[in-house]
Amino acid sequence: IRGIRQTHQPSPWIADYANFSLMPVSGKLALNEDDRASTFSHDNESAHPGHYKVRLDTWDAIAEVTPTERGASFRFTYEKDGDNYVVLDAFTNNPTVKIIPGENKIVGICRNHNGGVPENFANYFVIVFDKPFTAHGTWSGDTVNEGQAELTAPQAGAYLKFDVKAGGSVSCKVASSYISPEQAQRTLDREIGSADFDTVRQRAEKTWNDIFSRIKIEGGSQEQHRTFYSAFYRSVIFPHRFFEFDENNKPVYFSPYDGKLKEGYLYTDTGLWDTFRASHPLYNLLFPEISAQIMQGMVAGYEQSGFLPSWTSPGHRDCMIGNHAFSLFADAWVKGIRDFDANKALDAMIHDANTQAPANCKSIGRDGAEF
Image (cartoon, rainbow, N blue to C red; front, side, top):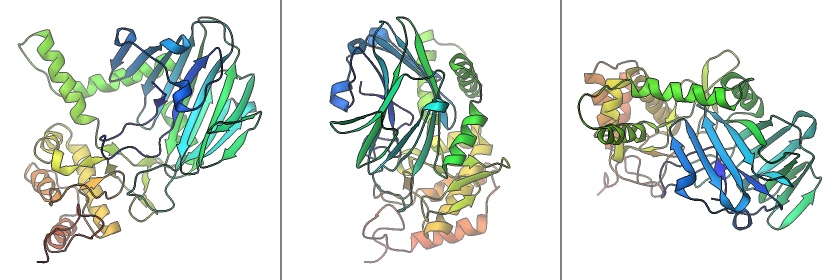
């Protein structure tokens, strides 16, 4: 384990974007991925939808994370006295990290991605710790800048040192925004506020239990129940809510298509050739209010980019062919989900069915329309 990220990747071949990681180390400062990597055992690991916990054997430390919709709370417990650190890695593509000692805070900008974004794409993040740190610095590669508070570099990170005794812990709350630093702070205040780690965990567990309660099964063994709900969990972790709530509690988002701020809903990080047969019809039955928002976001994607989305992460990706979005509109419509602009959706379908896919992105339009 090299770090605990605040994001999920939609698939191993699409990869992730806008991600950073946090990692506890103890006894000595270890910064780059290979140096800070730790062995672990599944015997000392617990993974649930609302909580992940693992013992990092190399560092005699325990890492935990529990989520909100656009953020998370972390807790690191150190088993030994000595020099105990938290290491932030903002990865590559000229990220920025800034340490604010007086506020027990790190803010920054991640710009890493694997395509499908406009030039002004960025993830603004804020991390607030529950106790002051005794030393800090930045790093890039093998270069350590002791006492430095801010760095922008091709690869950048930060580290904090804490006065924590054996058995003591350090917690932090994290939030991200694709819009602005102010929006990241607004999200942190809204989704976590003053709540401690255990409170955030209880909220996360309740949220997941409310989702699971949409389906109640009868009969079968405990193992079969576990298999069913594990599969149900995996079916609903994507698509990703890409929208945020502004100061007036209205949904807004940074468009991954044209790089502008938009009002409304947008969902990303799903390949429709994998999900159009069963996942989206399931959403239409269990979560019609979310399906309506997904349909609205697909129409918006057409308006902003000229094509319906097929594989977005977060914008169009050159992975898959076909026009699977068409069946999403049709299935939603016949199930009574009509809170989207049907005329624009029809225009989009006619356009995409008759428009040759761009050479650099075969997933949109119709590859082979010109022959």
